[in-house]
Amino acid sequence: MSPFIETIRIENGQIHNLPYHNRRMNETRRDVLHQTGFLDLSDCIQPGDYRERTKCRVEYDKDILKVEYASYRIRPVSSLRLVADDEADYRYKSTDRSVLNRLFDLRETEDDVLIVRRGWLTDTSICNIALWNGKQWITPSVPLLAGTKRASLLDRGEMVAGDIRPEDLPGYSRIRLFNAMIEFGEIDLSVDKIVLWFK
Image 1 (cartoon, rainbow, N blue to C red):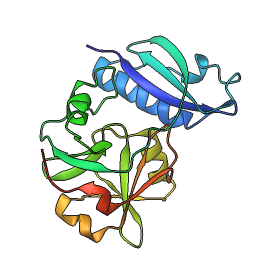
Image 2: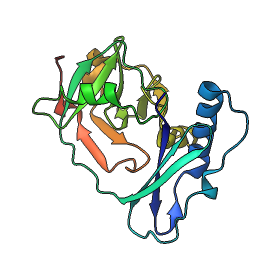
Image 3: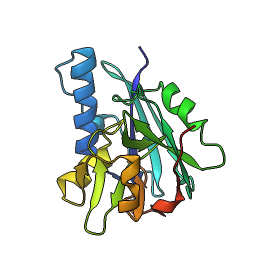
Image 4: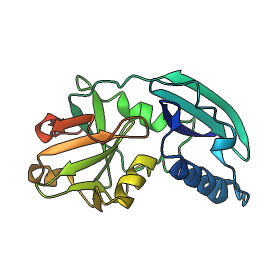
């Protein structure tokens, strides 16, 4: 079994969204590895030296295995290609990204893919998504990965969960891509930048 990972944003010496990362890590350890003890990421992360946006990557299984830091720059995304894979499974964030990498390779001339599973929109290869219907932001009810930023935005009422099919896209005007490293609103595209056919 591949190790699991948490990718945590550090900026201006502050750890972002730590309670959500702790919760997901410990839920993964409980559900997959049957570990009931609590690990606290703050025991192994040293944020004080990092002023610029920094990616802290923590590998773990039963215990913390490795902590690495790297400067972070957002990869520009200006177009998406819909790809379908009914068996795509990345419910636990791990070092094995083979399914996501395989789907990303289908993007052709677009910058990333938007993955459709069993008829429903899920995620891009690296981000959760939300779509604007003119009244509120809707994020897919069943993403490939339940992201920590997504969880915090739902808890704050900045978006709601709902089921979205590719054929529903004309009812939306904007799509936002976000994750632990990318703030909500930093990648914001018109829905017409989604290429509406499968490969």
